[in-house]
Length: 120
Image 1 (cartoon, rainbow, N blue to C red):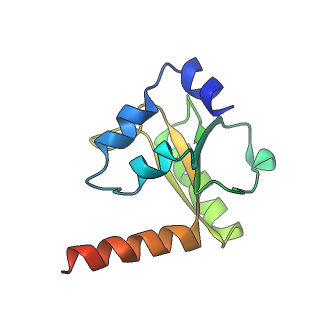
Image 2 (cartoon, rainbow, N blue to C red):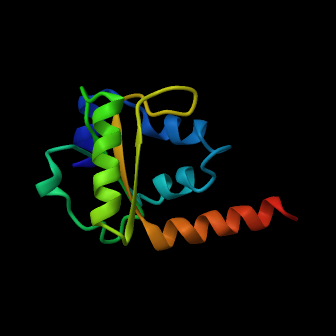
């Protein structure tokens, strides 16, 4: 399904994750390990558990920043074991609008590890 979502939108996700290493150092490695899933957004009722993935990117191709922001706040409130983010472009933004579902515990560990490195 990830290949289908990526090829349909003609996006080189490997290139994207390589380009954001300075702000998200673990994403490229997780992408290479096939730990990030990319799928089409089909609504909140179709959100699935992450399972073995550390993140899932839901392509919401025609969503505005306002729409993504509202959804991400709502999901952060009702899914406390996850962290939801969104991206709509910009310097480090995704090539298409996406909602990002991440396992909060994994993300917290990765951030802590990154902070420990920068403080040494």
